[in-house]
Length: 217
Figure (cartoon, rainbow, N blue to C red):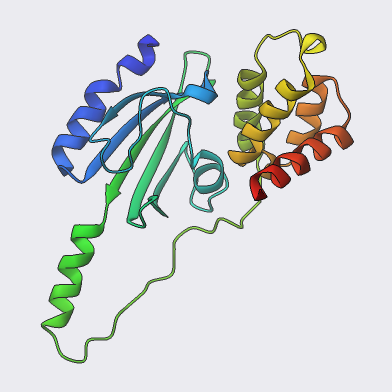
């Protein structure tokens, strides 16, 4: 593991111990996006495992309205089994100020929700209150900072491979991964990928559509 990321292991441990069994902490190495998870604590919360990739970095962090100062706090998503997870993510930079990792905190809200529902049941005529979310996924006001992170991810995903020797299916697989992770939601990434893979923008779009069709089957 990178020595910078190693310094976040005790941070992950102390956060998990402070907030308890329902708090998962994950350390990502974004220099290897396809296998970014390098450390987990309490990974029963979402099932994150070392060697897996990131899930919410683009849609819920970089494109979130509350993303500022390299972090997004208190956004929500649902686990595969339907539990509501409260999450916060901090980007980690190297000595050259390049984004190279992330620290993610995921809290299972099930027990909290159960306690709130029980308290509500003890107070007659107390209406359920659903506050508006403090972030909006549809906000696509990309900044140069966000584009920088996306471009770095593209560079790492394609790597130093000799692109002229890549088979068509290898290029399609790279583009499938990027599409799945939401990279193409960020302005300019189609051009960047086309340039890196030495193919046209039209070809990138066709590969994206091809992967979408396969997912429907």
